[in-house]
Length: 271
Length: 196
Image (tube, rainbow over all chains, first blue to last red; front, top):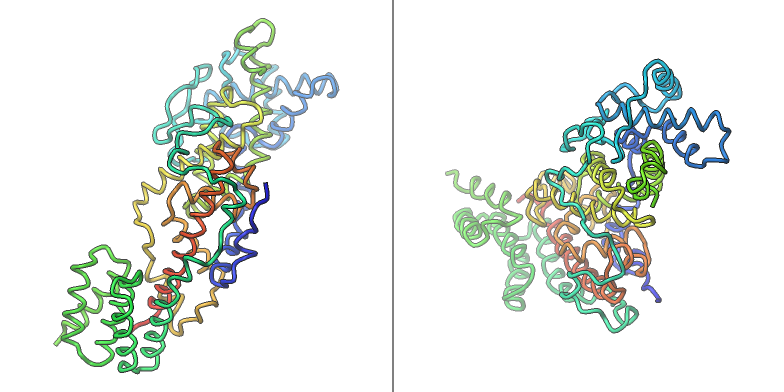
C-alpha cells in the first residue's frame, strides 16, 4: 500500500501547514507519565520489581522473591486504599517488604487481580470510587463506555457508511481542490478587509457588491454580512449598521460572530 | 494468557502470580503507549490541562479490563477507550463546532492583524483545535492518526479495525473537510482581528 504524502509536507498552503505543524509540539508534560503509573499503583521501583519478577529465572532468586512479595503486598495495600503514601521510590519498596514480614500476608487478594485503580494516590477527576480489595472489578465506569470487543480485522459496523475506496492509492487526496473553490470568495473578502483597514468604506462596499453579485449563496456569507455591517459603521451609517446587525442576529442566532455583532448593536444604539 | 489460566487453575498459578503478571503488563503497556495516548487525547479535542486526568481515566478502564485485552491489542484498546473518554469530555464542554474564543482571537490579531499566512504557534494550535473539533468524528480519527501521528494507513486500519480502503476514503474526505475549514478559519481570523 502506498500512502499519500502527509498534508504537512505536500500542501502548498502555508496556513494549513502552520496549523498541522503546531501539533508537532503535543507531548505529555514532564512527570505526567510517572504520575499516571503511580496512580495505577505502578511506581517506578514497583514496576521495575514486577518486571524483574516476571522475568523469573533470569533474576537472582532472592531479588525475585522480594519482588514477588513487594508486588503482591503493594497491590493488596492499594486495594485497601493505602497507596497514598507509596509512590515509586526505592525506600518505599523497602517499607513494603518490611511490613510483609511483620504481618501475615493476608490470604490472597483474590483471583481477580487487585489492581485497584480507584485507590489512586493522585486525584483522578471522574475516576471511579475505590474498589474493595479482592472484589471482581467489573463495576461500570460512570461515564465511559468501555470498548466491549477488542479490535479484530473484522470490519466494524461503522464501515457501512464509508464504502471502501477501490484502492487507497486512488483515494490519495488532491490537496487544495475544495479550498480552491473558496478562493474567489476569500479574495473578495480580503479586498473588503484591506479597504476597511485603509478606512476606505467606498471600496469596501464595491467589493461587497461584487461578492453579492457573484456569490449570492456563497460559503462565506456570514463573513460577508459581518463585513457589510462593519462597512456601514465605517461609513458613518450608524442607523443602517444597527438595523443590519439586528437582522444578522435574527438570521444567524448561533453565529460565531454573534458577540461581535451584538457589540455593534450596543454601540450603534447609543444616541 | 497467564491471567486467564490462573483463574482457571488457581492451584497452579496463584493470585500473586496473576498480580505480578498484570502489574508488569500494565506498567509496560503504559510506558509504551502513554505519550501516544496523551497526544491522541489532546488532538481529539481536550485542552492540555485536561489531558492528564483523561489519560488516567483511560488507564483505569484499561487496568480493570486488562484480563480481557488480548496481548498485543493494548494500544488499540487504549485508543478506542480514549475516543470514548474524549467524546464524553467534549459533550461535557458542550461547545459547538467552530466557535472561537473571540477575545483570545481578537487579542491575538489586534492591533495589527497579521498577514494571512503568518501565524504564531500558539494561535495556530488553537485554530487547529477548532478545525479538528468541527470535523466529523470518524474522519477526524483518521486525519489525526495519519496527518499528525503519521501512522501508515495499514497501521490505522489495524488500530481502529476498519478496512484499509475505508481508511483511504476517510482520509480523502477528511482532507477535503480540513481544507475547506481552514479556508473558513482563515477568513474568520482575518475579520476577527478587526475592530470597526
